[in-house]
Image 1: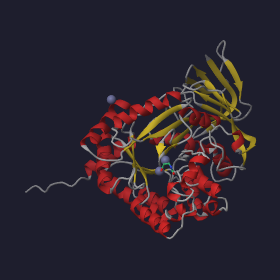
Image 2 (image 1 turned 30 degrees about the vertical axis):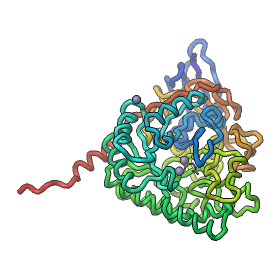
Image 3 (image 1 turned 90 degrees about the horizontal axis):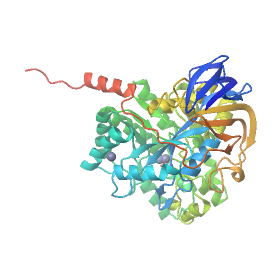
Image 4 (image 1 turned 180 degrees about the vertical axis):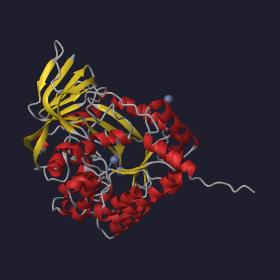
Amino acid sequence: MALLIRGGTVVNADLSRRADVLVDGERIIAVGENLEAPAGAEIVDAGGAFVMPGGIDPHTHMELLFMGTVSADDFEWGTKAALSGGTTTIVDFCIPGQNQSLVDAYRDWRNKSEKAAGDYSYHLAVTSWSDQVERDMGEIVNTHGVNTFKHFMAYKGALMVDDDILFRSFKRCAELGAIALVHAENGDVVAQMQEDFIAQGKTGPEFHAYSRPPAVEGEAAQRAIVIADMAGCPLYVVHTSSKPAHEAIARARAEGKRVFGEPLIQHLVLDETDYLNKSWDHAAQRVMSPPFRPKSHQDSLWAGLQAGSLQVVATDHCSFTMEQKRIGKNDFRMIPNGTGGLEDRMPVLWSAGVNSGRLTPNEFVAATSANAARILNMYPQKGVIMPGADADIVIWDPKATKTISAKTQVSRIEYNVFEGFELTGLPVKVYLRGRLAAENGQVRAERGQGRFVSRRPLPAFAEAQRRLKANTAPKAVAR
Ligand code: URP
Ligand code: ZN
Ligand code: ZN
Ligand code: ZN
């Protein structure tokens, strides 16, 4: 069926203009002024609101077995939460279990995601090294539509990999035209700091933050940047939360390196004082890695989004119920790491970013959708309002208001780290491939409507980096 969205201002990452948007089936087929409605088309009046590409959250963890428990939102409820807040595609981390192959993990994730109401793609995690891992990376890229591999430099004894594995895996990424992702924290230092605090009887959630100071993130980010440069693969630093990590990324980019940084909406608006709250529950709800930071780090992240040294805003949505958080009542090391935020990412970023004057509406679209699509190589299928693109469309009313409350959220947990935030600027209608998926925060999409988004390797920047590497490779002296 055809759908004509009339009377809005189309906001893409590069341009805003008054235009109608015509959709046929799952795709946008025309964008322009005064478009004719085909016979039988549904006509939606945008009423002067903004018409933007559906959001892409490049960092989520649905139904993930992590720290001995399973994150509370599964693909159905996670994607429904996403849709209610304007996010039509998520990129979830497929993390192999102990001794599980990458390809088996990928199959597990495909099964788990059949429930998804919104679209999804994956990053595959490399948590160990063997000939099979190396082979499987090739199969994952060449036949399973995933072009990104995640490496945890923290979570010692569980997911963490050392520099030896980083360099091997990054070289394999370069060979395959894949992008390396890192969780940048020096896991060896964190593990010792945790032990030291526990030995001193310091067991509260505030010591989660004290055991992971900004310096351990900055050091790891810098190390990953150097290793990726030597390997010749692009690097994407997930959940960049601190000034030292941001500065390492900004420096690398100024040197021409293909490095990207992803702040989370949580780190942009919440700070470390939450861990000093008298309520254990309040503090534990906010335990995630990296932890929330002092205000000066927030300022650096905002500046990075404005300057372009940081490109995308994610959530790292990995939600745990209060019962799950209380597993760590007597030892902060046992508190499952992670917070929610999928449904709040775009409205909170609009209020804190656009209304404050830090970001333009176009920069908002870049940070919530277009840049993720470009970096992860799903542009222009996703991330833009243009003919040929998937009809993932958000009608955004910059005057609509709401107060965030766990009581009305879609996510299955009983609290919200943004509780009480007053927002101005909300998605009023959200379309997923041409179908109404959410309206005024109410989800219309159903379980199973989401689809896997396949991504090819070697985006243009990776191809250029490959050529540069070849042209600057050490050459033998002819003797
Ligand atoms: O605390 C976090 N971030 N939990 C999810 C796993 C990860 O490190 O991204
Ligand atoms: Zn296969
Ligand atoms: Zn992480
Ligand atoms: Zn994560």
